[in-house]
Length: 451
Image (cartoon, rainbow, N blue to C red; front, side, top):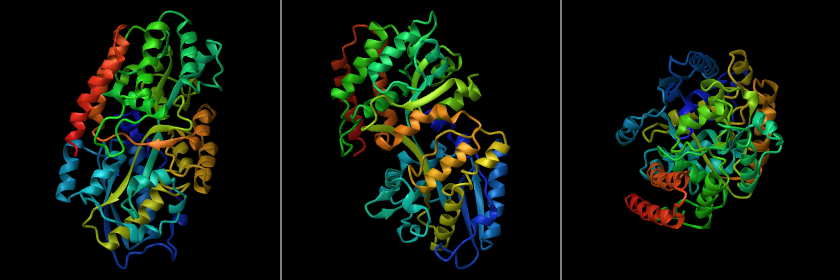
């Protein structure tokens, strides 16, 4: 749903690489007793030649260091095909080490469609340094069912060039929604066609951004048990009231509404949109696909999320419940090497730079402020090809933000809330209380089907 999700397969394999000598095993690591072959999902397809080349080089070096293990990648773009994924899980035909979105993990565990790897995962060297909120995605009580590959949360993407033109400080972006309103009015005042703040309200994207802004204010989409809607709250009302004021009182959001994913990207790339909600990879999409320039954009935390939550997402790997202990041990060795080790696999930024791919985006954030996390950040800085200082406000806020996943039945709930989002942005007389009541009624029916 997010730009991260749409572009993730391209972004997250950037920098795949390794130093062969550093991937050797030691006595603490699980070792397969004999020759073992593992199938691994999300191998970059041949249509992504640089990523595919890096993956194949990594596999070759890994197998040289572990000659008793053969890694067979299964390529696909995107890495999950929604039309076949659930069928593969139900039939047990997924790879030995299969790729998952965070939002699918809980249901996979409940349906026993992944192996319990608790007795093996302790051998993964950086395990204790991984962010606790990230690892919690793959845990059920004291049992562990997978490992992360990527983690991100939403932010506020802003045009630094427009900030300067409007007399705003690009190094000090808004921290509250009142500050967003003030900045948006100044940007909109630059002249015809300038939009201070852009927002989605169609194609499920409006409801998605409603959730992001709700979480940042401390609200929730659903009750703790996931059975009823919880967005008809003071926080939910504040989200819609703020947008209504910006649209009609401030006139800082432009007259064109019912926007979807590409619309804001195009506006940001065109240089006349000041701010939008989005993950850091939005900047890469704007640069690569919509004629923007990395140096013109910055990212900070979603306003008011400090001390609260930020809508987060990511992906990782789980293990086929039919996988033998030998396959699980081999798979853990591969994941530690390829997904979790600074300077190797997805974190080999030296090779990313050599291949001409962007280095410096502050994702994936798997380790937070720990030794591996600091090492990864140092490597990003060393090999950066994008202006990493533009992401400093986003990075600095992370220690005070709790990641919060999308709700159950997310896309269906987002579709319901598109109605409320579009109403406040297209009707000056929109009744926010009624909009939330109607959305709550529909959402509760959807959630009832999930229990």
